[in-house]
Image 1: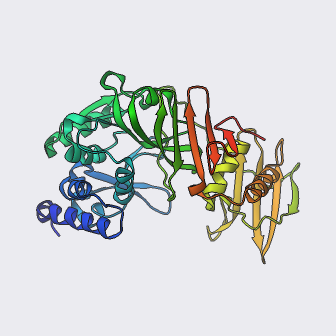
Image 2: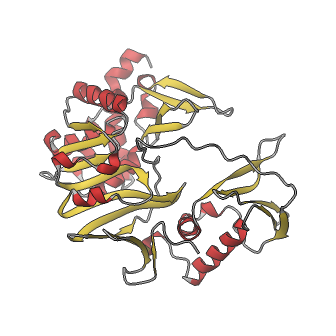
Image 3: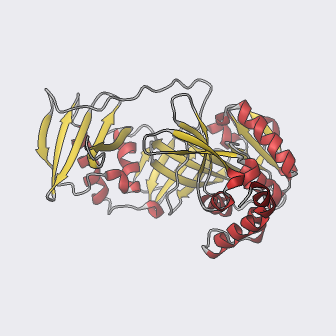
Length: 382
């Protein structure tokens, strides 16, 4: 397919994507179906990046592959000098589910945290009217590019370049606030800018991959309550002006001071159970994770966990037997085992049993009911 023909065919691709999202149940409301079918994703994301097996990122022109652009795929749109992806265009199926959860209706004023490419802003502007849509992103270049591309597409929402944690107070109050980036807690500025009976939809992550989307509604002036969504979702972390680049943690090796033992915990990759992984990081503090690889085959041989205090553990599974090496100031795998036991004693709560209460004084994660077992977000470390 030539570039010229691709440019002419994008509407058919967008309409097909809208139909797919309706068929999958991700879209249930006509206004979001119409928005997906009408907003040119390739125009708002002219260039994306893909990573090869060596870790190298290569740009590609989206207009040359409309099948890929108008599909449920995340498109990486910005790479920092260290080679880390820092901005993306979210999977359209996830974006559609979030818009349905947000339940924004004509007349509602909506604030989006994380402008990115502007694609979601375009969907909101198409469905609700550009005068009702506001978006903020910390990167002025991203905001300027999104503003220009949205204008070409015929949309002129209000875009602001600033730290999203502060919201956009000059245009408050908002009936809906949606965050397309993750944060370790809900910034209180968002609560202050939310209208009566308003809704916040945010990705609360206490550590990497440790958390989920939560839908919060205002119950009084100083309190929001809501539940985590049943399907897991993940976004890049919200960036701030004061961010300091994080040094990579060196992979520990078996050496002096390490202890070795077997473990009865039959889930060596505990991050593959998202609710458990969330509670581990809530209870024990942020834990980094990854695979260890065979030096010859580059295939995974085990799981590695690290903590900011220098503690680490390495699990290897051979012939159904799980072996653990631990090192550093505390036995990290032991804390993971303890948290897993605690989770099982609570009857292994899944996302549908977990909720969040946000108040000025604290933010608490609870099970089953706000008055049930609860833990202070970012404070519970046992």
